[in-house]
Image (cartoon, rainbow, N blue to C red; front, side, top):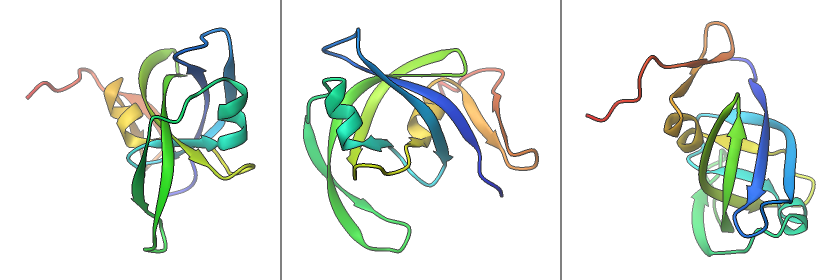
Length: 120
């Protein structure tokens, strides 16, 4: 499958007048979303904890995370965002996608809305 990107806006829960908006790579292999730590700091996102994450090459690395409002494709959710390295490419993880009923269409390399979100 090719790369799918979507314009995404992160807003600090504590400082709702500040936001970081960029083109995020949709990463269905990532549970949480990630943005450059310097950009998260500029909008006032606080570090809430630290988690171990397995990277694509199999190594495990600890990253701090914060909580943000996440907006894309006219939808809004909230969740964890990992403090990535400064200048790193922002990633939109599968938790944010699924929480608003959006999935990746691998055939057309686009995002599409599900008719309903499962509560089963």
